[in-house]
Length: 191
Image (cartoon, rainbow, N blue to C red; front, side):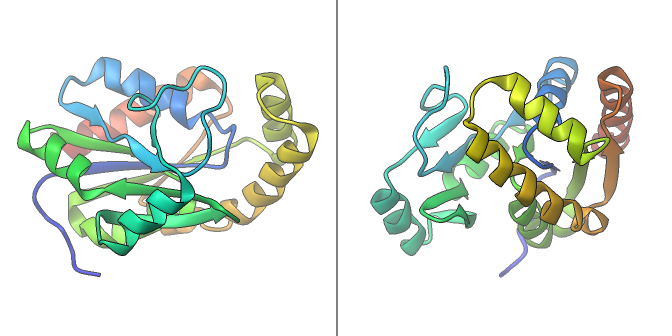
């Protein structure tokens, strides 16, 4: 995998329910230079998700065909039959505008993107205060079945083990404190 060094990128990863998307939303409001990279997925939309806003929703066949054609910077089959990835065209689109890319990706994707972008990347892991709190947050969302929540919790336990591979770990025990720490970390990185 060759390194890409056109501009800066900020990578956020976390177990599902750790508060990553909320923190990223606050950062995008505060820093006009940041632009969200929309990932692709082969899963169907959840809740009020819209194609081209939260994700580019592709069929599994289309996703695999585009991956085979080399259109992704990185991609991963996160759950059996469910892929996520970052399109090269999305990276190019954002850098052409002179913006700093913000990635919201799973833990494996975060590790892979850091390897790809090297020193041009800041990788941040959002840590839940505990696995029990994570379960409570996922239940509170009301978007997943009990079985799906337990799968996400089991996966979270594995993902937390990868936290040391990130440049920065922020524990989201208090959302306001986590946002403040993320703002300070990003401001130092983007200058």
